[in-house]
Length: 251
Ligand code: BV8
Image (cartoon, rainbow, N blue to C red; front, side, top):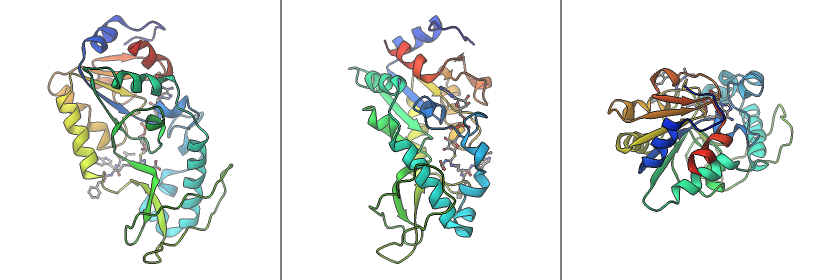
């Protein structure tokens, strides 16, 4: 484990020799863009909102207006955010000739894409992929613009069936998109290096993705300022923020 400002030599050597890199990102990847993480005490979304309150089908069924308001506020946060140098570094690395870099993200924002990356999988869905909660029809509406969290916003009715439009994210207790998860597992199985960036490693089955590489003896490197549930199974860890670590790895 290294917490120096310098790129740990063993991690730099792995990054420079890798040709098939799989990167699993979590909320910490978006933190330096100003998008709050889920569980960090000082900025964690969950500190101010309870996931059981807002990120479950039961919460939606009980109070869709509260749920819709929370996602509208989060979407406004994401729209106001910019990709940071760590996002840009991954996009630059992905563009290197001869490098197959695949990004699987737990994040529901579009910061990787806005940095120029192609994202293999959003395993927890996509804030901007709105759909009808009843008939599943995609909805090309936008969220209302919300600067500060508000308690309630009237959800929108589906033009097809009259049901309510919901965020295209995966709530707790909902199955992950099968293809997204399978593609992520395959990417870990085919990688010669796996980077796990900015995740507490608490949410399954996404947290199991790096294990599919570790089981084959492929090095797993964690980039996170703090110890996480990933740390014990990672081969190397760099205790550094993504916005500083990734540009140093790619330069
Ligand atoms: C399911 C979308 C079954 C919504 C989210 C075992 C197996 C299977 C399931 C379970 C299981 N055990 C428990 C479960 C149930 C549950 C679960 O895992 N619960 C946990 C809490 C115990 N899992 C589920 O419900 C999943 N579904 O299993 O379904 C099924 C099967 C068939 C049919 C029906 C059902 C669905 C889980 C998806 C939930 N949705 N998000 C939304 O966004 O509103 S999860 C949410 O947490 C986000 O996606 C987030 O990405 C994810 C994980 O959190 P992290 O990304 O890690 O963020 P966190 O804040 O925790 O950590 C941030 C980290 O970054 C920290 O370590 C910090 O140190 C670091 N950091 C901070 N700053 C920086 C940094 N790192 C780098 N640089 C920095 N600058």
